[in-house]
Image (cartoon, rainbow, N blue to C red):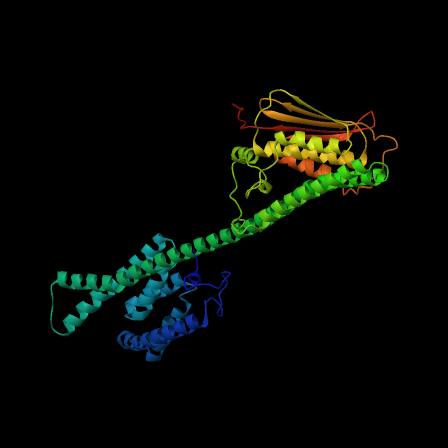
Length: 444
């Protein structure tokens, strides 16, 4: 049986805030006033009972005080208080005690069979007391009503004293349990919202980190290749400035062209980052695996939006031509039917070739290089192999941050492809990437 201390309410963690079993001091003082009123009533009724029973009035008053004072325990031991009210009912005392104790019992989580049994006992005790008392009073006044009248009055009085507090207590208890359940649901929803907010914050932080990584990768790809070619042409210009003015002039023009191209690409990228029309970054919903793969394969990098066309396979020839103009021996071969792949796939292939050629300029100046593109039905393969650097080649002193291979691997892995890079037996270096394409369109 659940104690009735749970009925009046509890503190935040289920611990009463008031003394002993009371939820608060207001509840305690309310019960003290009720118990005092009940004790006074029972004491007066006990005096009348003692007078009729032929016992000392003091004993009857003391009995009434003790019985009425048990109402102070109604929130802790409601069943015991109801039993006391039933026990003193034949003595015609405990009117307030019986009503309040029945209400308190019905409003608790006490099993309904126990509530029904105690309510039945109270009805029976009140019925017997009313029947006997009413019949005695009528005879004392010289009136002898029919038995059915006495019985009807006794039934109505016993039900009138018992049914209302029980029914009202059941209603209050049900309402309180409903409020508690709604409060628990609200607390549960609040906890879920807090967890969702934490997860959204984590996803936002992850998105910010991914955006920073993507911007750094784009900046590296845009700047490193152009600047590497500029440094190579500058070294060549320095070497031939005095011997071949015409070649020096051409190299100076190439340096200017490369610088302008690098500035143009940087402006386009900064325009994307500063665009006022670009919506604020929000945390996207978690897509299904199939949707995520299709979206990653279909969507180009954000650097290709806002009016800037992303590089494609058609731009690889111009990329190779730039390296040839810088003095590198580059062979380009395309196997299979040239097809149109998803923009993200073509951009990744272009960036892999670009970074591989940049690494050749940095670490193997003068080395012969082969670029192979294999166009297949559902994938695009890229292979860039260079030999060892040429002996006596000029040292252009290009710095390396070690992020080129990392960026290439990240691009390929984002498309669920494969990436391998490492030295060859001949002393060169090889970079290969396999880029799957799930939504490729054939060129008409």
